[in-house]
Length: 249
Image (cartoon, rainbow, N blue to C red):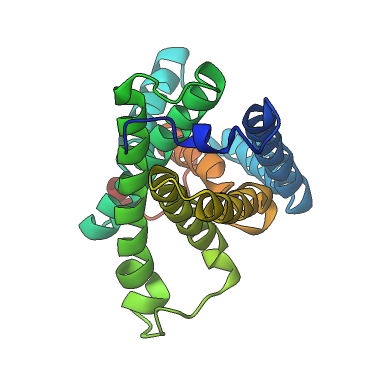
């Protein structure tokens, strides 16, 4: 348990290559959902218009070296460590979820494509898959029950759900049932394994096809917006107050 390939348990009931095709479809779903979100909300159009406006208002021109330095600061502060959050607990929860999710996804891809019919891949792969899942669950349940704005500051019930919660709920359900499915497979319960795997697929599909209606696409927007804000601060086109500009830097 926790060292084998969790997906091997369903190879006797699913067609060869099912999980590989499923992973490809989910990647396409994210790409299509993000593109639709950009088109439907006119986000790209708005971003390009604001960028053109800010460039026209710039008081100095930035060279390639300056832009590269800004990109590095954006990556280190806004992307890698979620520096946008002043609350250290909120920041830590997002770090756990982000890095856990990335690790979990990478190991899923490796297990599905490199070891599709191997029950005993290198133990480190399955261990990392489980580690990523546990990181997601620690950060995610901590955020969901204690750190959500409407829970922590507005006093609403922890079980109150709105559309903005679609991403975190589907993520937690998907990863939770991934581990439940793994436990059922380790217990060699064929019926429980199939039921848990079906629930896992349901919530995983919901996670990836709901991009236009959830906060999933924000993972792609935020780095671009953070980079643009820093460029505006450096070229003199920012309309933020001086105190806010110092905080952003």
